[in-house]
Image (tube, rainbow, N blue to C red):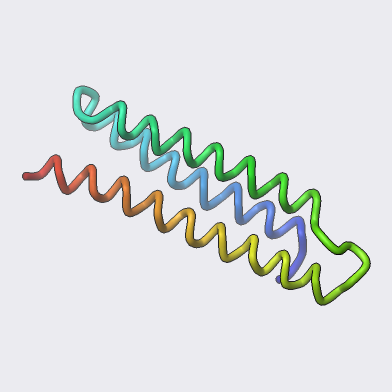
Length: 98
């Protein structure tokens, strides 16, 4: 992990990309599945707020090893959360094609 500032930027960038993809889908298909896509946007915002809160309030501030593992877990949760959101959006777009 490079720094806390970089982790926060990664959180914002990755989740804003998911949100941008959702808005792009809504823009291209305004009459299709907008409720499901809106739910993905809400979940992305919720995930972002949760991860930023966790970064701002780490556990075990005195123990370097615990802090390092804590931030690695936050990073892993970011990757997993973004992957899950992208899969949900992809499932909606593949339903549309059928």
